[in-house]
Amino acid sequence: MPSELRKDPLSQRWVIIAADRAKRLSDFELEAAPDAPLFDPFIPGNEDKTPPEITAYRKAGTAPNTAGWRVRVMPNKFPVLGIEGKLNPRGDGIYDHMYGIGAHEVIVDTPKCVRSITALNDLEVQDIIWMYRDRLIDLRKDSRLKYGMIFKNVGSAAGATVYHSHSQLIVTPIVPRAIMQKMDACEEFFKYRGRCLICDMVAQELEQARRVILDSEHFAAFEPYAPRTPFETWIIPKIHETHFEDLRQPACEDLAFTLRRTLALLEKGLGQLAYNYMFFTAPFNCGPLPHFHWHIEIIPRMTKLAGFEWGTGFYINPVPPEEAADFLRGLRIVEPPAAVRAAAASTVPAATATTAVPASPAAQVTGAAAVPGAKDKDVGGQGARAS
Ligand SMILES: [Zn+2]
Image (tube, rainbow, N blue to C red; front, side, top):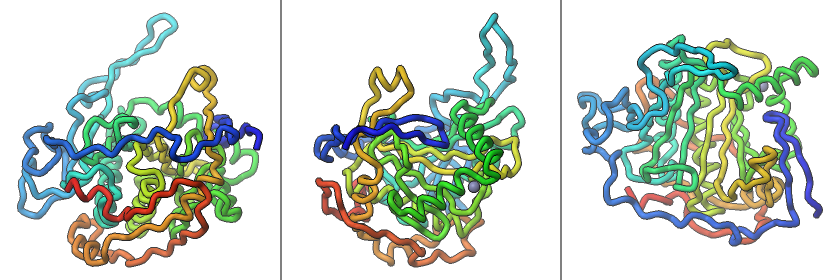
């Protein structure tokens, strides 16, 4: 198959699907599974090794900065932006600058020393997602701040420096360019067609079912039409919503299932890969918009950027997303035992504990493996060795 240029309508980015360079999975340089560290700053009992916590979901009666927490948030020890001070925006000839005001927080996903949230159960992942929501709702009250990006780095190739599963939140005093570009593209589409680009994308992906890997009650997970990297995967709510932080409990339950299972499929197929995920929500200071729709992007870090990518902004991807989706749909995942999930019911935050978690969300995973190199292992228990 000759290579193909494809344009992503959301980022307006072009990629080159270079299928004649297609690799077998064994040709990718995947990161070797690391061992759990000898010293873990995020394990219960080491609370004094981190900055004091901002908030935590914790057992009633336990004090801040002690054990007893399920998800714990603290300022980053080496923040890229600080919360104190004024922005003081000003010019220097043709250049603009301002003080580095914002927030940089670390969200420790779990007290367990595991590398990835695939080692947790759905209720534990719900806690993490609900904490993301709580932090954005809190920080958006600060009128100096414009945008909050929740993200996760897993593995050193993805920028992680700590093994223990954690997420980060950076809140900036300006709306980042990548967000503005997406919002502009969505607004253009809306002006032209009178519909939300991302709603249309989800509808088309589900209808065509060529790149879909998971279709749950509230979310669709699929390989985007123009992925930057092999196995880039997006998770998008099926119902139009502008801000992630407006997420409600039933959708939170389903998102925990969808996110954990999607990552488990990637890890089952590709090993303990390095990856990033990012939550793209709308800026703080806008209300609900008919044209912007929050979403999650997962980027496996299997390829490296070289001169052509830096120079042009094009990405070269040797794996067509249709083949990646076929491969992922063909994998079978062993779920954690139901007893483990039931035992974890008490970990749901107080605000969410009134709603029962469905034992089996209405999700479909269908299809057959098409890419060679699949490994047959139990994803449900992956990473548990380190706990
Ligand atoms: Zn929409």
